[in-house]
Amino acid sequence: MKSKPIIFTLLLSVSLFALQGQTLDDARSWYLEGRYAEALPVFQRAYRETPTDASVNQWLGVSLLKTGKILEAHKHLSFASESRIPEAALYLGELYSKLYRFEEAEKTFEKYQKAHRRDKEALAKLERFREEASQLQRRALHTEDVQVIDSLVLPKAAFLSAYHLSRSSGSLMPVREFFPDLLSDDKVLYLNERGDKIVYSKGNNESGEDLFTMDKLLDSFGNEKKLPETINRDGDQAYPFVMNDGLTIYFASTGHQSLGGYDLFVTRYNLASNSYLAPNQLNMPFNSPFNDYMMAIDEEKGIGWFASDRFQPADSVCVYTFLPNPQVALVESDDPASIYRRARISSIADSWKEGADYAALRAAAQQRSTPRPAVAAEFEFIIRDDAVYHRVDDFASSRARSLFSQALGLEKQLKELHGELAAKRDRYAENGGADSSLTSSILALEKETETVTRQIEQLKAEARNEEIRHQ
Image 1 (cartoon, rainbow, N blue to C red):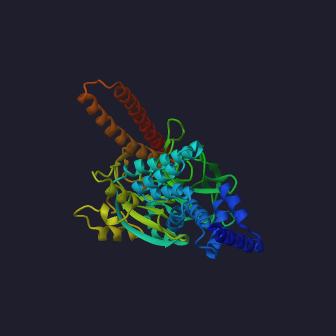
Image 2 (image 1 turned 90 degrees about the vertical axis):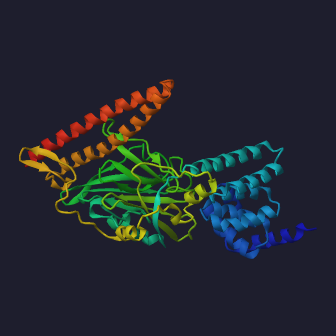
Image 3 (image 1 turned 45 degrees about the vertical axis):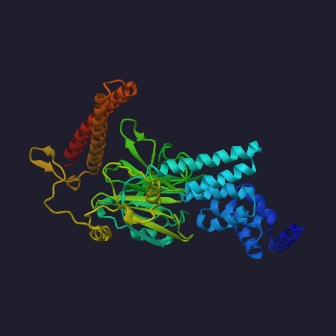
C-alpha cells in the first residue's frame, strides 16, 4: 500500500516531462549511459516536483556527483541512502572519499556490501569504488608541504586576473583573445617573454583538446606543431605554462590517470631523445578530485599560482598563491586528519611557517613586475676575451639565447640529479652495498649525470658560436 503514492508521483512527473519533450525515461537512459550532464536538468525538474521521491534523489545525487557538484549531491544521496536505496550508499561512499572523509566512506561501503553480500557483480563494483577511495587516501597522505599564502575566489571568466606575472615569466591570455575564430571557451594561451612563441590548446568535443606550439615568423605566427604523444596521449590537455628555461612545461589534463576532471602535470624536454619526458602528476594539494589547472611559477618573484574549483559554486574558481619549493617535501604528521586538511587546503594558515611575513609576500605576488637591479649578475658566460655575458637578455641572437636558456635549465636538472645521487650513495654506504637495486639505480644516475653534463657543455658551445656568428 505504501508504494502507491510513489507510483502516482512518478507517473505525474513522467506526464509533466512528456509535455516538455524530455521524460524521466529519457533521463534514466542517459543516466545508464553515463550521460549525466544531459540527464541532470531533467532530474532537477523532477526533484522540484517530487522532492521526497527516493529514486529521484538517487538519480539527481549521482548526476550532481559525476558533474563535479559534490557538495550539492550530498543531501540527495544521503536522503536516498536513508530511504534504503542500496545503490545510493555506494555513491555516497565515493562522495565522502572526494571530501577526504575516508572513514565515513568505508562505513557507507560496508552498508552497500551488507545489502549485496550475495551479489558477485555488485561486490566487484564495490571493489572498484574502494580502490579509487584507497588511491585518493594514499595520495592525500603524500601531500606536499607547500606554503599557500593567499586564496582568491573569482568568476571563472575572470580567473586570470589573479595571475600577476613578471615580464620575464611571459604572459597568459584567453585563447579566443589571440585566435578569435578558434572555439576554445575558457582555455588559456601562454606567450613567452620575447613574444615569439606561444603554447595553447585546441580541439573539439569529439577528438578532445591537445597542446600546440607556434613561432613568430617575421610579423606573424606560423609553423604550428602539435606536442608529442607523451603529452597529448589521452583526455584533454590545456592551460600550459612554460618555465624560463624553455624546457619545462606545466599543463592540465583530464587524462594521464587524473584524480578527477583536470589535474596538474609537469614535463621537461629531453635533449638526448629530442622529445618530452613522460609527464609527472603533481602531489596534493595542487591536485584534488576536482578540476585543478593553470599552474604558473614566476621565478623572478619566487611565487606560484594555480586554480581549482574544489568546493566552489559552478561559476566560480579559487586561485591559490603559493611559495614554490626548491625540492619536493611532504607534510609530516602522526595525525592523518591534519594531513587531509592540508591536502584539502581547509585553511591556508595551516601551511604557514613561523617568522614569515605573509602580508609582504602577498603584496609582492600582486605586483605586475619586479625590476632587476641594473648591476645584478645572474651568471658569467665568456663569449670572447672582450665579451662576458651576465644575463640571458645580453644575447643578441635569439637562437643563442634559446640554446643558453636550455643549458641553464639542464644545470638545474643536473643539480637535482647530484642531490639524488648523493642521497642514494649515503644509503648504499649505510647498508654495506647489500641492496642490488640501489646499486643499479646509482649506476643509472651516474650515467644520466654524465649525459646531462655533456649536453650542457654542447649547448653552451653552440650558444657561444651562434652569438659570435650573429655579431
